[in-house]
Length: 391
Image 1 (cartoon, one colour):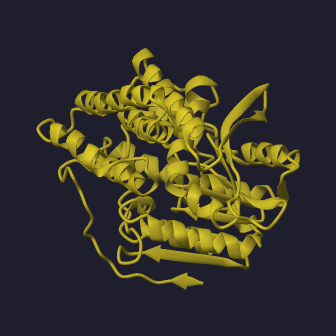
Image 2 (cartoon, rainbow, N blue to C red; image 1 turned 90 degrees about the horizontal axis):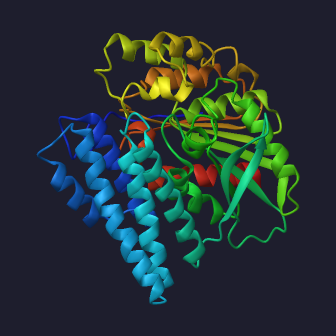
């Protein structure tokens, strides 16, 4: 089934001359609905950045400045016994620290310190909030390593063992971002949510030396093995959802690991090698969410040629034809990072007999990359689809 859309190029760009800054500002705004951001704070930050567009050092400084202020206030409010206020402050501080880190290269001591602060603030938010319940977990992975994750239980479910949605992020995202954007929509529909920093992402790459890799089903199998050992979930009904490059992660994983019962690609990836070859040939003068050298860092290599070699496995042709479980692919009609033709190629190749391509054009869901320009309707759509497939 294909749900058609019409073209609509208009979207909010705070910095019209800088796609990267504008896209990440929109990503921050997307957190407002879950309390991960406050529009007034984002406006304060962006106003101070308006005369320095493209200066990534200034970007880092301004987001950290506001995050530091919120974190200090959170400490003060906690001492007063205002735990819910402190929780909210920590939640936003965590998000802003991670926004600061978006363009910080190299990932030096200062960058890693700020990232640790983001995790500390997020865990403080989880400890102090009244909802949702959140469990910090570590998933056994190969070579005695562990993938960091959060387990968020289903809300108001009548089932003793509810289904599980495994939620990743993309090339440059984090499990905290995924929590802010989507976890609530899944848990409120009666599904548990396991949110993971998969290989090459978040804490996994920064502190555990788990780098990006093409064979993502290895991580998927480890996640399922972990879930099968939990007595409080239905490990026979597990779906996988992931945005951006996660469209590759999820699609490959569900194609290769047959224990997954449903798959949502939150944005298409068809041939990631070809995507990066175009970006490199254009000297990175294209629509990118992060600096180009994020690529070499993700693979732990020194040169772009080495990175391109690693990317040769990041193709889904010959892989998604093996998919059997129900498959949903959502894509923005005006996605400036990944063209619509890639979404159509991926959908057409998918071997599932139960597959849906839903294209959002901005009227009822965001038309940009991963729909961050108008996110809530898309997340609700994914949540309803998952509920239909897992129950």
